[in-house]
Amino acid sequence: MFDFTVSLPVASLVEAFHNADMMGKSIVVIQLFLSVFVWTLMIGKGRELKAMHRGCGEFGRLFARAADVLELYLGRTRQLHDTPLDTIYLKTCDRLVRFFDRENRAAMIAAKSAGGLGDPVSGKEIELVCGTAEHLLAEQTLRAEKGMNTLATMSTVAPLLGLLGTVWGVLDAFQIFGASGAGQLTEMAPAISSALLTTVVGLLVAIPSSIGYNILHGGVRKINIELEGFVDELTGRMAYEFQGRGD
Image (tube, rainbow, N blue to C red):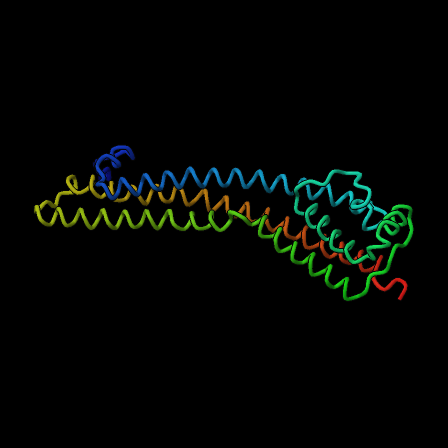
């Protein structure tokens, strides 16, 4: 019978940290701060995306039931919130209303509220309104994606810092062992364990942040699709209801 059991020194993470040099300890501390930052960012971003999705869904249902494109803007039956759809809708409607004749604007608003047709808007003016909507779409897309680049960077930097600490520690350990002539595994293992500690901690930071990034990226993508669809519907309804009337 063969005994495959090999007796190796088992060093805990705490022991490995204590045995590490100043460079290794500094990298581990930085990685722990990165871990706290990443988890804080992921939790906050998750809540933000959830609130955005809920607000966009609520506004989208109200807009779909509106009799005309300016009903929510003129009637204000619902208080507009700071959600992407509310922001795009409000500012795009502001842009549209500016093209109405100033002298007849009050009459137009009254006629529109009463079901009248209101003043016509030229094709070029509609193009400007669409440009405003597209610009607002880009702004709100950046708003939804805010923090995602930072999260992706942290998931990349953490393991690279770990690799740096490991290479540094192994290089330092071999230099010390080469100078002292020590070659026993029992003497080398603690130093190698301390060198590998930074890689372990880096992976513990990178793996959750990579998973969180992919989950959050899916949420961002879903919101961006909702925004793009809303802008297409909004500008299409504006062109249908106002462009070329009276031409």
